Length: 164
Ligand SMILES: C[S@@+](CC[C@H](N)C(=O)[O-])C[C@H]1O[C@@H](n2cnc3c(N)ncnc32)[C@H](O)[C@@H]1O
Image 1: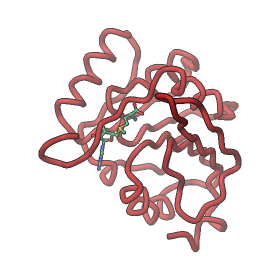
Image 2: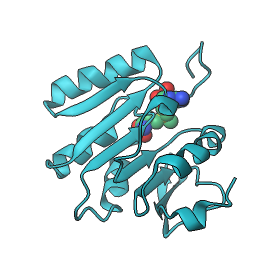
Image 3: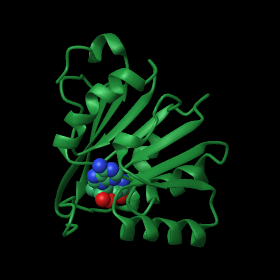
Image 4: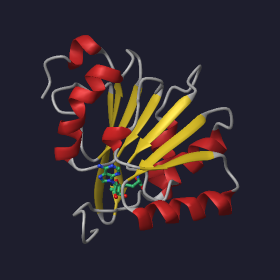
């Protein structure tokens, strides 16, 4: 837990990262965001698996963002890393979004998604689903002696209009 901002940092294990990336129907999709990217592991893995994508992450905690910069350097991948809040990221060009942040943040992001996301944008959430939106697919994986859930969405303004 980051002491000042009160935001938890929990890195997604590589096996789960891989499944999150494999859930995406990649054909024709170019611009990929991880909102609250931590050490950028999802974006780095996605870029390695799909070199033609543009991978963009934002992270609000400077020390964690620095970890992402270091990891990017060590992996020699071309990933854009913004030190800023998810609320300051322009999502109008997003084809794919990865999301593993607290449910209250997801709820606060929903109006932004309604304003900015194109119909057809793929969203993969880990653990916390989009409120009021029915996933295309749900996947449950073993994690730390328990399970973790993944939710796959294809954004559609009509179905997301009335959600929280
Ligand atoms: C649970 S971690 C997930 C990290 C990474 N996406 C992963 O799956 O390994 C959530 C991350 O979101 C960041 N975060 C929380 N609130 C944020 C905000 N408003 N803007 C940007 N990043 C934020 C946290 O600092 C943390 O690194």
